[in-house]
Length: 294
Ligand SMILES: Cc1cc2nc3c(=O)[nH]c(=O)nc-3n(C[C@H](O)[C@H](O)[C@H](O)COP(=O)(O)OP(=O)(O)OC[C@H]3O[C@@H](n4cnc5c(N)ncnc54)[C@H](O)[C@@H]3O)c2cc1C
Image (cartoon, rainbow, N blue to C red; front, side, top):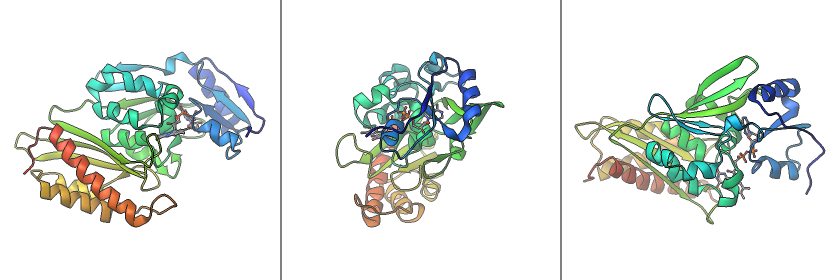
């Protein structure tokens, strides 16, 4: 299949990219790694009149320490660079652990962190991971820069808080407290496929061995990343036990989620997966936070 005709622009600075994007608005699409956009153009599911290539803007690709102790990652950083970064492994190990689960290495060589977050596929790992980490997205438009908490960024199926004339430029991830733990679990039909269901978890534990924070974020079971708030409320303030984890995983699957069925998995099967994955991920995350479960 071949895409419909389009005009190709390759700005070399962010200002120039914002300028042309605001000129063409809805008619234009930004091109990052092209691993989602080009197939949809080839199938003619997307027919942008103008393609604005971000690949010639070198200032959008970096991984840096943030002054607050976390990380700042440029939107055009390749997924493979994130995967191989010792800084990411040290500062936000959940992100490192998630990267090999995304597609195949050839796709991660081109695909960018910003492209995946902006694309907002409900089965993608990164929106859930950034939600579990409590990240912030930095976007730039004709009016300048604005920062969007990840909890406000995902607004529906393949929909984000990005305006049509804005470019996602950076992802900020906070530092991880000493007694915190993480896990990512998913079920796929074949290695590299999008998940039938998955979960990213971040937990924190205080000096009395009580859970002081918990974020359980599912993917593949809703319109976007689904934060299991009811389940997290069961955990916070309590000493984690095997029984409490089971109760939280059950609450997440039965009350926090409203999955739909498709040819790959029924609603019932997705709920079952969500409960099993929730239990496994919480056990792993609390284990990493140094909790010995009874
Ligand atoms: C066979 C296959 C399997 C895959 N499996 C998985 C998987 O298991 N998990 C997963 O998460 N992903 C998977 N992907 C998708 C892959 O991770 C893509 O790389 C990613 O979704 C898009 O990133 P990209 O840089 O290629 O963006 P592009 O395809 O270039 O762009 C995607 C969309 O985001 C917009 N966009 C891109 N960058 C920006 C920006 N900076 N600001 C604003 N808008 C922007 C574009 O305009 C476009 O609408 C798979 C892809 C393929 C082809």
